[in-house]
Structures are given as structure tokens and as C-alpha cells.
Image (tube, rainbow, N blue to C red; front, side, top):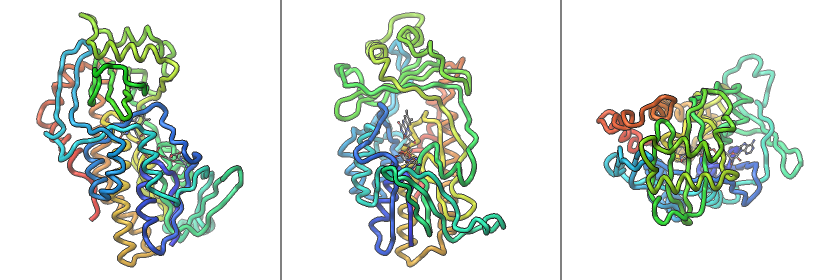
Length: 407
Ligand SMILES: Cc1cc2nc3c(=O)[nH]c(=O)nc-3n(C[C@H](O)[C@H](O)[C@H](O)COP(=O)(O)OP(=O)(O)OC[C@H]3O[C@@H](n4cnc5c(N)ncnc54)[C@H](O)[C@@H]3O)c2cc1C
């Protein structure tokens, strides 16, 4: 049986690693970046407790490799930029284990190393299709094979007769767009900046914290090797470009300085750090796209951001890529070890969707709901107090404890 994984990001590496360990399977994982280019775009990640739980359940060895490059995430605090604490939640109250804090580049490096030689770098997939377009035109629901085209070091290449194609090529998935159309993007009306800097805070920033001034929000935490990840968020017109005047030191100071007093020591350091590193800041906009787990042809699985691009408010993008990939890896391993083969691929994809659909619906809706305090006109005090009430806490428990599993 021939399996191709497109994208050696978070989800792709986990699935490719598991499949490459199975006998009798031909597995390739094609990644567009060159070896050792674990680009991070200045980003730290907080992986939710559910991601670590899923990883440990799937493979303690893989979890240990990731943990070796991580700090544990134990506490979630929300304050105002003047230092008033609104919310201080030990994660053990809502989760079975801590989450983790890691540099995006380190997560990629570890996962790509663990996936081993099945990952081929410098391979950009440029096309995908079904083996028999004439049959496709006749409306047949299930196809026997797919193909892909890609370039490797400038040379055009092609793989035919693929029994299972796993699309882990991220939020702007070429495979999903080609096979199922460009997803409808929903803009939420929030711009987000990110910055990774050496830690000069003198201990002011450690575990995961957020600071509000009106709907303007900063977020920060420390990651190995002693760097601080800072993120900022400001409301914008939904779908509109991020105004240039928002990207200035004066705008940062205006956005975060409280009307009634000075910035807390933590926030003064964070705002100074943003203002001193303007050229290194990366900007994006909060958006989500509808979930889609498989193509109608029955041979292509979408996994991670290619299946479920969500708003990053609860740090669930990579977390869900991990949770979903661990479940898929366990499911495919069990099916193949039980003697299953290519003919059953469409049924396996249907089962993956059944196991993920409700979970992803919940995670995406909860992430979007949690964005309320970052929208134009939001009151972070009232909004954060609401998050201390039992319904929100119950949803956090569901988020962090009730992971997708197989069996
Ligand atoms: C600023 C920012 C902050 C974030 N913070 C968090 C956070 O704190 N916590 C969290 O859980 N999530 C966070 N996320 C989201 C998280 O990074 C993504 O959800 C996660 O990386 C998705 O994993 P993936 O495996 O689906 O895709 P990716 O990790 O994006 O991997 C896709 C891979 O496919 C490759 N690829 C793409 N196209 C092709 C092609 N045509 N051919 C070959 N290869 C291709 C790419 O090079 C890449 O390696 C954040 C995202 C951003 C942008």
C-alpha cells in the first residue's frame, strides 16, 4: 500500500513517523522547505494540556522528545495592563496534566527528526488529482488512486497510484483548494502581532499570561532557551488590512497604557520590548475556515490546519494538529496491523471524520467564543469575570481532558 503525507509540519510528522514504522507500507512525506529550515517566524507556542495528553497516550518517547525542548505550562493568568489580576487559573483545576511552552522552530525540529528518513525536504507539491478523470466526470464517489506532482530541486516529479494521501499542508492547503475548492474564510476583526526575543525581563515574565487594556491584549510567556514570546492583539475592521499606523511605537503605547495610571512593571517591559523591536514583529489577522476532514473521492484525508483552520485565541491550532494526528496515527496503525488494506481507505477516512467532527466543532466554537474580550468595544473585566463562572470552566475541562482517541 502506498501512502503519501504532504507537509512535515506538526500533524504530518506525527502521522508519517507512526506509518513509517509499519512493515509493508510505502510511506513518503514531502515537505517544501529544505532540511534544517525550521522557520518559526518569531513564534512561541503554548500547547494545551490536551495536546500533551494525546501525545503521551500515543507515544511516550515522542512526548519525551518534545518535553525535552519545552517548559511546562501550569498557570493561566489574565490581568489589566495596570497590574490588576482578573483571573488566575492553575491548569490542574481543569486539566489532567500541564500544557507546554515551546519555540515553534524547536517543535518542528524535534518532530521532523523523529519522523526520520521518510521526510523528503525541498519537495513542493504543485498538483494533485484522481487516477482516472473520466471516471471522476461520471460522478463515481470513490476512486482507487490519486497522484501528485511536485518539484524537487527544480526538477518536476510525480507519484502515481497513491492509495492514501494525507494532506497536512497547513492553513492554505493546496490539496484542499485543488480538490474541494477554496474554503470560505471568516475574518473575526482582530489583528495579531508576534515577537520572540531573548529574555531581558529579569524574571517579570514566566508562565502564560494575558494583559488587557480595553480590547487591546498582550500575551507573553517564557520558552527555552530563555526567550520570551510576546503577542499583541488589536481590533480591526473584519476583513480589512491592518492599518500601518497601528504598527508604530506610539500606537503600542497608546493602545496599552491605562487611562487611570501607569503600566505595571511587566507591561512596561513588554511594551518597551515591542517598541524596540518593530522590524522583527510579524502581523496577521484572526480568521477561521470551515472544517473538512476528507475529499469526496474517498482517498484524501485533511489533517491539522488543512482540515480545521481555527482562531488562535485558546492556542488550539498546533494542539489540535497534535491531538488529531495522534488519533489518526493510532487508528491507521490498528487498521493496518489488523490486516486492512487499500480497499478500506474510504471507510477509515469516514471513521476519522466521525471521531473528529464533534470535537473540532466544539474546539472551534469555543475558541471563537473566547475571542469576545478582543473585539471592538469589548469590556475585558466583565468578559473575564464571565470566564470564571462554572459554564466556562466546564468547557475548559472538556477542552483539556476529553481528547479524541482511537480506540
Ligand atoms: C502567530 C501564530 C501563533 C500561533 N500560536 C499557537 C499556539 O500558541 N498554540 C497552538 O496550538 N497553535 C498556535 N498556532 C497555530 C499552529 O501553528 C498551527 O495550527 C499548526 O502549526 C498547524 O499544524 P499543521 O501540521 O496542520 O500545519 P503546519 O505546522 O503549518 O505545517 C504545514 C507544513 O506543510 C508544508 N507545506 C505547505 N504547503 C506545501 C506544499 N505545497 N508542498 C509541500 N509542503 C507544503 C509547510 O512548509 C509546513 O511544514 C499559531 C499560529 C500562528 C500563525
